[in-house]
Length: 275
Image (cartoon, rainbow, N blue to C red; front, side, top):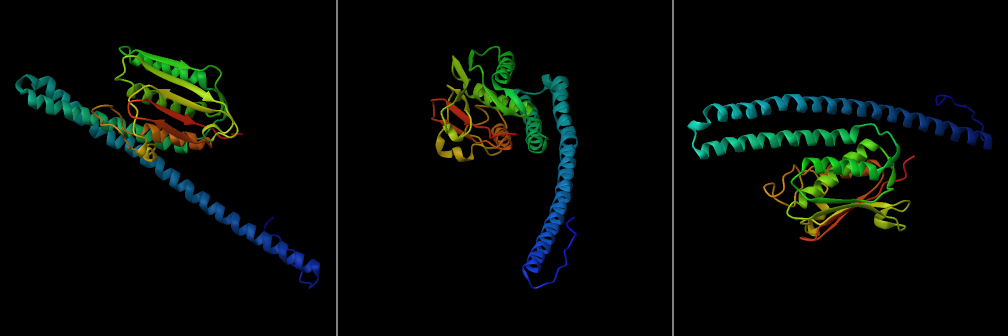
């Protein structure tokens, strides 16, 4: 009961202890009141974010679908009357509206990653990585991609969020190995103590033999909309790695990149001690 006060006013040690106790409970009461106010503010902000996400998801998608649909109708109904340049313009309109749709999806996913409740359990990262690799291989039948996934990779975390992180990292590796006739993507762990900032457990990695990038700008690599290559070369919205970083941070871990132009890239990440 933080409203309780001893009320002893004597000048001896008992009185001094009483006044200290009353001051402590008063301070705790003020602190609890401040926490309750902040919790109410946080709840309002979360509700506003939910409302914003709903608005983005529905209100912005509708005109985008309209632009794409009417552009397609124009191509189908009047395409023969248009010269190649005009048809090219309409195809560009469709491409850009579809890209905007993907960008909206990625932004919404990034927002949800930061607000969703985590369900912690022991996770078989090797099985997650194999499942993601199978999906990517099925989606890219024309590619020759060798996935080398170390067995027995286990971590404590939220399986849904960790699958999203691995999906983004492996999709990224597939994208940037596209120019390689024999693409190779590895998933594994460095178990030496303190490896890549993981003092209490293994540091995991996703490594590829793709085009790589210059590490000089790597400090911005995990920010939203950050790109090291033109969209015409490697498509994407520039949000995947920002999503990965947010997931790793929610697990109390860290992520870092290593790369050189033309020599592939490696992403090392650790997961904190989750209860």
